[in-house]
Image 1 (cartoon, rainbow, N blue to C red):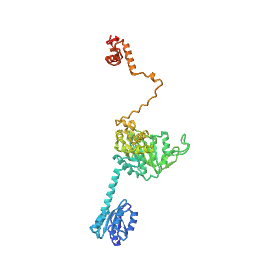
Image 2: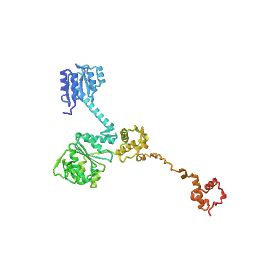
Image 3: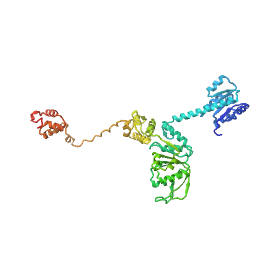
Image 4: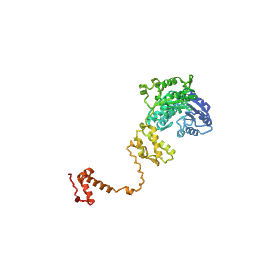
Length: 471
């Protein structure tokens, strides 16, 4: 079977090689034999064995050198050393060179089988642990940036779903990367060399939607001057991505359901059916079950499409991923705009983390681009970010510097000293109040003593005869 592990036996004594092969005949592995180091290298290159049974005494090479060579390959096999010279020194040298176990001749069949089985199990577990570690540590995936647990789950679903023909239904708020997820599914699938056709169902007028999906023939409607392929025919052999699928008209939903079930459709204005092979990926920023309950989306179509669900998390639920994405945008836009930015200042990081990001990654992209276009520096500071971002962090953007206006002609005649204007206002108020300083002070919003002091400084004491009390 193709999935049986291969074990390479390197033994120059033909009779012993036959004995060992007989020992392993009933084991669930494929055993290949090499009598020399040269033969072993050739078989290793073509068969990529999971384990090697290696005799250290070879006619054309030092077995320890061959051991080091095999262990340096990627992926490295498990190497079990077999030799008639079972000294401690030889065993230690073999282990230091990378051997996983050591067998001294002669040995029993059971010992050989158990030793190889243990070595293969160690290799399987090590590779599984490494795969899990890499999956848990990855911060990028098919255009996505982020290592949050929620995104790791999304990455695993995409990887597992890619090879299938099953329809994928992606949900998530606007700006979370639904089309990016659809493209990742296509790129990881066996259909990667065929077309990926994306259709935004919310951006196309309803009366043109059927033609966009299925195409039309010449004369099918006013303006149909030539035959036109629709998205269904363009995606033949590949992937058709229907973004905002809940926006489809109910009448067209019925035709789409039949197309998904049969792979057959008719162009608008044509009586001939066409057959295509299309893998469907759909997305919406709405709650599809709510749309079904409200009668805006067909229940049978929902269950036909909702086979493998992927829920993309909002940016606010992804923790530090937001900073990784912001730094990636900053580096990209700084290069595009020829700016000096190298990173985010501490206050900018705090502001970005404090913002709710209702527009998700798309909003973050726009915010960083705006800041880069309008500013420059070694680090991007909070004050450089758009107002709606820093407002949530309680950071006040500095007011723009006042632009000085040119002094008008004759300013020396138009602009009067403040003291002169004040004296004129006070004296006018006193006159209007019939000389009653207390009443004038009340109207001016000051105390009478203030007016007395002002008048005294002007050289007008109590000899004026003005009254200080109401009449």
